[in-house]
Length: 224
Image (cartoon, rainbow, N blue to C red; front, side, top):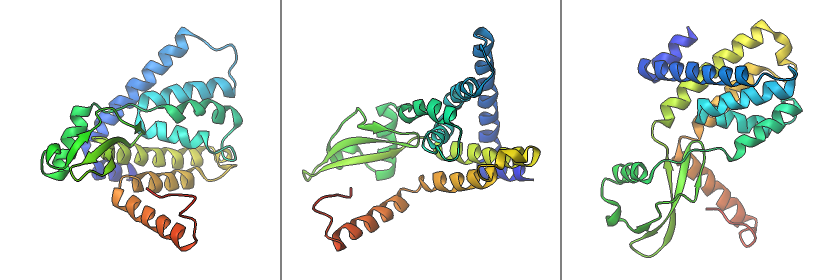
């Protein structure tokens, strides 16, 4: 039933596309293992294989890898160390696509709002990337652009991650020794889907800015 709900919420096409991508990523990862068999089947080996698989699976799983790297109290040390490599792992979107997204959201050409937009991103993460720009009125700004198709990919992937966590926790309860897998997956799902809403992020920034001002901290710290 939950598989049906995930498919219904994101669309059959997206679900099938992500399933095919997962199968391809798994096949490539297994082929790598076959070419270079491990000397020992230990946590370091399994962590490396899982990290390679996550990187092939794309943005959602890179984000999960970053969570693993940042959670030493939840995951074993070998996994935390291996997934440190995911902290700087992100693919950038070509500027022509970024330009099209900005113009679609604005409903007008870039030149009617900005005098300059840097085609090279200042930074790129799994969900979005940012570009330096200057408004026609002269102010320097930064444009944060959500990567195309990322919303459907996240919803589909995180839905199946949650289902997998529930199944694994049921089959092998020992996996829940450091915390409920399904609860962790559910919290991650809620948190990561929340990152898709830039208006929510804006609200959080405004709350943070108000906190700094009310506590006299705005001289030593700044909110975007």
